[in-house]
Length: 289
Length: 302
Image (cartoon, rainbow over all chains, first blue to last red; front, side, top):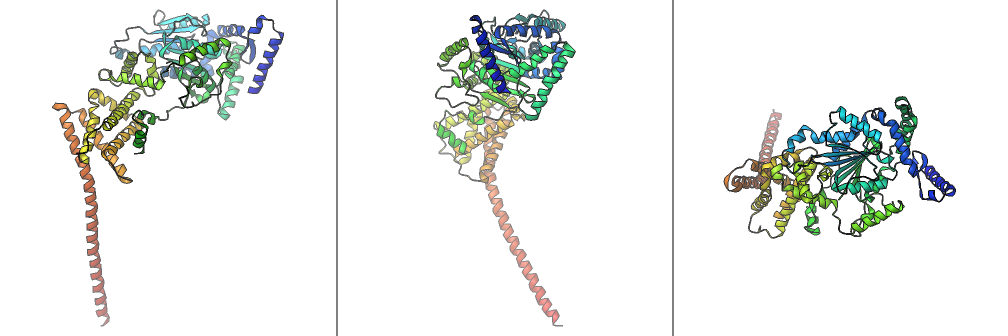
């Protein structure tokens, strides 16, 4: 199957070069699920997907993963080990799941009790939520308001592109991206940006759907992905195409080892990954030194 | 014993922490980037065949620039972690063996406190680092000419244990916390290994020539003495720097050595008794047989 997709990719590239004008010779083809699209179009198409799914994003997450996505995000935040006075950036975190968890972790009673001891952290915690899609951000802001955090200065909602962040160099203690990096057109650019904004000692954490290698389970997972999820998408969100895109984009994403190498190439140290549910989800972590 | 030999061969710079890499509880894998390996580093694990040049021109340019930066000495993350832990130790008397101490330590070094999240079993990492450091200090002290020639073995052991325990004095107020961290089931394998190495090192320095079962017995006994003294020290507020603890230590060590002698004596004693009882039992049996045969003989005459 991999060979077929590679030959398909080369085939379409040859075709697009032959029939393209001088201007478009510079644009490469990239994948949008199993389709081949021009790079400039990908972000627009992804934008459309998430505009469509924004309102039912959280419900669909629950249904598709059987509620497991909450546990995965808990594990991600646990690994991050947030502390008071932290400056954190959550990219592609539109609806705020990870950001809220970090906020809770920092402000929990235990932490507040211990905060007295650490007088150095007089700075306030800042959690920036960055997303390219304003609709997702709006859903996030709504959820914050529902929790009573609407006016809280700790949570800052920023519209921005993972490949070109508007934050300063060496300004963040932590960077997380949960289920967002496969939607980015140039993964290397996003990783380079992550490296840029992190401080020395800052941590990069990526939670993403990944590749399953276990024999029988792999087939079950494939069946579930391609047969069940698009139907659920149609049923619950009324949008089959977006969820078809979703499962395809998961298959197109590099496997764990390859992605870890890409992270290391961006300059990070101590790159590790942990498979959850046999590889359905993987948490990649790294440090900038 | 082989470990101490290896350490001596490789020199004092070989920290024991490298020997204590335990398998992590969850399956994680680490990648070291091939493009950042200098010729002096060993070959990395993981996928080295990936050529970073297949990314687009701008990325390659950025990478070239970064590779130039990387030629100046980069701190390996292990060294950086060691620096953070060393700095954190200074905050332990005030903050305890906790994440807060590690956060303060990392701030001191100039690194974001997020790095604390990357230590496996955080507080345990700090305690284990301290134990390794103390062992290394002990070895250094021994190597730099500690005078043990004029002492009998039991006194040598006492002296070494005392030197080692004295390193803990600055942290004595928080030491119970460290002990409880070490007693955690997750941390027990490492702490056990560290103590075993410590005890091994002490016996090696004392001039141990044991073999087989005796080797284990000696280390177990010394391990017991060490732990007992350590715990005694926690509640000792005698004047003149733990005078009572050292008296306790000397007594225990003497007991241990006496124990060895008493076991020997008990063995001989048992053998003697066995021999004596055996002889008298044999004599009894002979007597009985003789009587029976003579009586039998007499009766048959009737």
